[in-house]
Image (cartoon, rainbow, N blue to C red; front, side, top):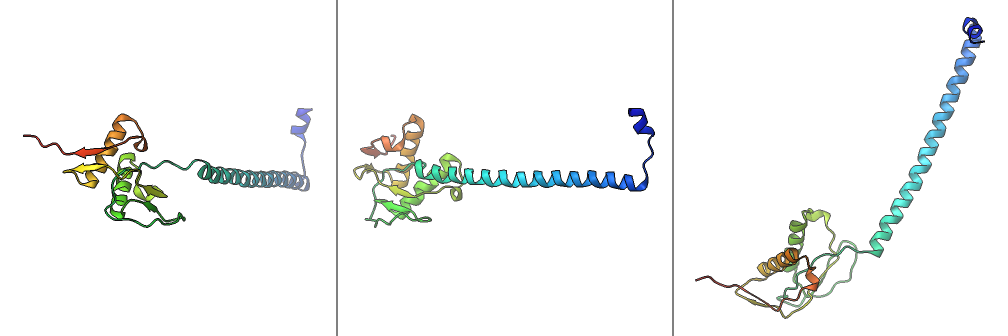
Length: 163
């Protein structure tokens, strides 16, 4: 049977018909694969989009904040996209906190999203230490101890001068 097919001579018309049918079948299969890929892509993008929005709504990322005293009362702004709500923290201190978080985590500042920075307590006594240095000390203590900054309670920070 195989030998007779190999020895068979096809005319030009039969050869073109066979080639045309094969070509059409290949195009139909490719079109089916393209439609299938588009459908899978749309389903996947909808699923990933839902996961991203659900992840933002369910578990907002914790941002470390340093409990430093504000030099002047700061008005509380509502949380809206693109804005930072400051509670009891001056803009200068907030900038220091954001720079520290960026430096400690190794994430560029333009890739971080801060929604609010809140002063957790107003009773930290600073003796011969400025506020940015105190914030750095608090962040280092939190990092070295492994205790989140919001769970630490600092009553005073004092510079001890060596003799």
